[in-house]
Each structure stands twice: as structure tokens, then as C-alpha cells.
Length: 68
Image (cartoon, rainbow, N blue to C red; front, side, top):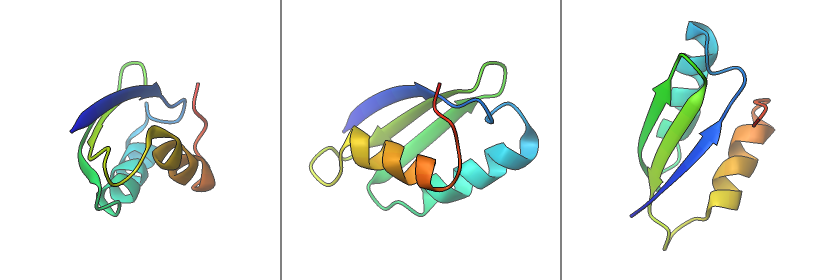
């Protein structure tokens, strides 16, 4: 398993956080996602043999989130 950290501007409000959690829960290769509501920090643990950081970032951006 590998962990990546990104910052998402919208991940400081309840509704976008719930949406982001749902998106990441639908990605089978993502084992866990922790979101810090104070600064929008998102730590994602995923199976690097099944997906890449770039693929996860693309999935998040497709859903309309902005990575800082």
C-alpha cells in the first residue's frame, strides 16, 4: 500500500467532503481516505499495484474538485 497527500480547496465544507468521500469509496483500489477539514488535506492510502496517484487525481478532478 502507498499513501499520497493532496490538498483540495473544496474539502473544508461538509457537503463537498461527503461527496469526495463517496467518490473515493467507489474506487476499489483506495483502501482509506482521511480528510482534514481545517485545511483540505486529503491522505489517501491505495494499492499502487492497481492504480496510480495520477489516476486517482484525474478521478477527483473529473468530479469537479480542484487540487491545490
